[in-house]
Amino acid sequence: MTEFLQRRPADLSGGQRQRVALGRAIVRDAPIFLMDEPLSNLDAKLRVSMRAEIAKLHRRLNTTTIYVTHDQTEAMTMADRVVVMSVGQIQQVGTPEEVYQQPRNLFVAGFMGSPAMNFFPVTYQNGTITDGQRLTMTLPGARARTLDQQGYSGKQLILGIRPEDIHSEEAFLETWTDAVVDSEVVVSELLGATEQLYMELDGKEYVANVNARDFHNPGEVVQMGFDLNKAHFFDPESELAIVNQPVPVEA
Image (cartoon, rainbow, N blue to C red; front, side, top):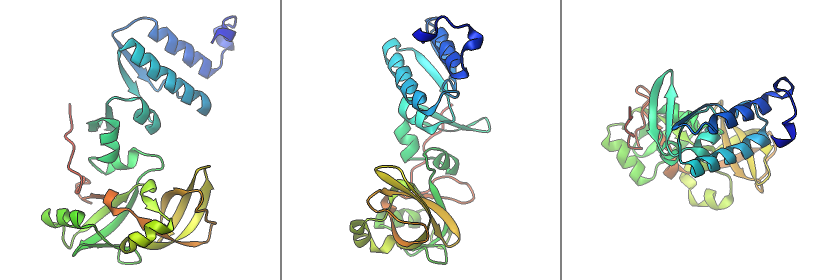
């Protein structure tokens, strides 16, 4: 902010005022910092650099910091522990990796991650899941045994799978032939090294994040493979995770 020291507060932009407020809070040498979306008024590039600056300050000052954000990227990259809340209730507490890899319920699974986790209503029977139409897949043995042991044979479930766990490369499709579906490309977004595909399957849209070398145009029908070893399953009534062991909620 050195170049703005001669300006009056009213001449500063919203993002500049927010940085000044952040600095004023930090120099007070308080035992606890409470930050309520401190980067919300900053542009995308500045958010990234400020995120890194706050993380470095935290390590240097070693001060307990409670940081409120709706940005999953901020939570995942900055936190030692994440508390996911909905309607004033704690849904899950854990490290960023635990919350992302082992979501306790549907809300946490859908909230953590960008793009969000894809969800498909399916029925499970004899090691196979199906939506009654084109989505019919055979589960890996361990996943099938877990569902059998917990009494879900013949019952409805919700399949959750993250965009990065859906593949279009030939090597995956040839290896996991029992977890492949034909889907139509609705929108294709090139993001540099990756491509974000918005797909349509049985009247439902889902998102896949694939290698940019596998570029596809809207309207194409493409084979997509689901990595069911990384899939999540949820009870449609309780909305709690089935396959993943529930993570205890801490006060």
